[in-house]
Length: 98
Image (cartoon, rainbow, N blue to C red; front, side, top):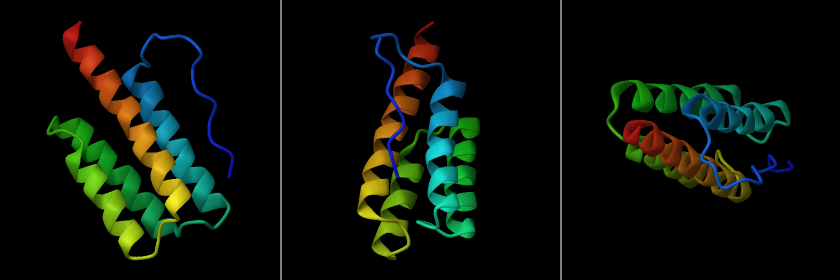
């Protein structure tokens, strides 16, 4: 699975764009059968809940690690999702500073 292209400017992503990129990674992995549909749904729901509750993204990081440890998430995808989650976190930080 090819990683999504990163923005070439230094400007942080908008929150909705960063979340969309995370979800596209999940959807792509599901479409190529790298992860099962229940794992895809779980990851997207955990992110949506974490952002909606404003409680930080540690629960999402933990969920990614748990799914990897269960053998239900490939190592490469784990790294891509954590990088995408970093972009979500940066977007949330930027949004709260404005």
